[in-house]
Image (cartoon, rainbow, N blue to C red):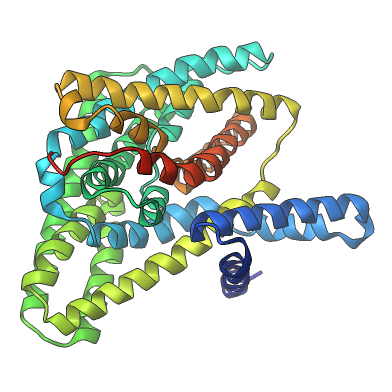
Length: 416
């Protein structure tokens, strides 16, 4: 199928299933769409088993196989979704909690990677499918970052307070950059048999994350100056679109963190550009445009996550170790949240209920699946992809559908 055919099918399915969810099941839009596409995928598998001559399962698996999930998410959707999310985040709220957000997005991700990696090593051995420790650490790196797309989508309907929203969104917008750096470094070690050097990782982190932030700031400022010099909303909308796609593409060519670059650019335009560089009419059009982009791409992405079950190899061993890794990832998330907060002496300001919410709201999503699918064709790839999918499904469905209730139980003030 051509790219246009695939896009047509995905958008049509998103619209139909989105309508059915809104009309009947009333689940949160993104989760509802994913659940319905997952059920539809399982129904196709069931019908294929009952009526093998129809070839339904093979046809659907062929369609899903034609979609390069990793490139679609990482090179296509991610920049647009991150910019749309950052555009509506209050920079002042992030700056008030900058040290907590920074520690959660760096120390927290590293801790989670180590905890998941070590415990996963024993889990794989327990089910009789031993996986080398370095590959377990690679799995820890790809599963540790919270998915900003999933988190921002859930918080829209969870009714979280302004303070809690700032803590969760701030961390989730930035920790994927650290997770990708750790993933790249550990993947290099796993594939070349080299050693992990702290200096090399620190340099890679500085280049990817700090370099990406500088690029995003520079590109955002240039776009802001351009926005101030004109008052023509179609062109100004186009400038923000060019900023997002151009910055992300340039970051990739410069070996910088594209996600960090577009987040920084989005924060600058959303907080300074809309207030000082645009008329009220333009700011409204820009906001509406990016809200629409966010809603449409989120629908397609969560549909893809549900359809990917057709492409994942899942046997009894994969399922068992996947179920074992779900609580392991939750424990690692708890550790990665609790340790930085205690080290910074923020327990009192965060409140007793915030740590459970931060733990449970640490959703995994399409980014983790995309990283897992980008693994080279090694012997353990199938089980690592299957386990990633199991953790993501639990995170999206169970945590995503219940985090709103947990948020409602946490009463916290707006003090930082």
